[in-house]
Image 1 (tube, helix red, strand yellow):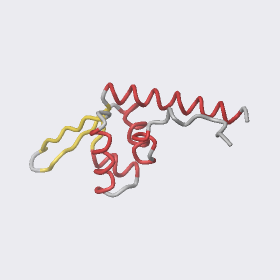
Image 2 (cartoon, helix red, strand yellow):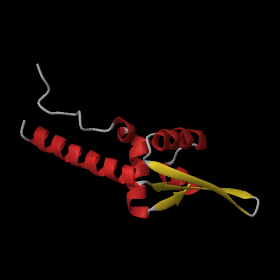
Image 3 (spheres, rainbow, N blue to C red):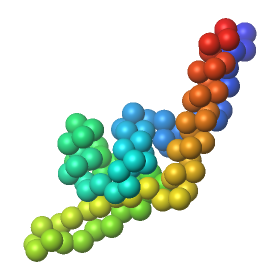
Image 4 (cartoon, rainbow, N blue to C red):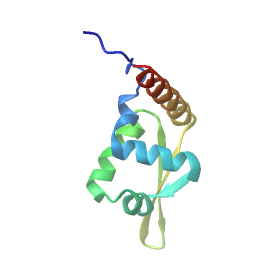
Length: 103
């Protein structure tokens, strides 16, 4: 039996819980530092790094690394491609919710 809804529009890169949290937060915050995201999402440094790399490889986030004094500072922002992908993801989720509501 075929599924009553289409999940093909859901972007696998964004759909993971942590990556969705990163993208959703950056969509409103514009930019966030690594520690801010780690604390907000309650993940380890390693876990956050893996998810940020996946988003960066997809072109959805840009990561800027610098130093403040001797302390490293990593800042993350959503790219235009990331904004577009997130908008498409939200649209696909909305359509999915609508389809499920009709079943």
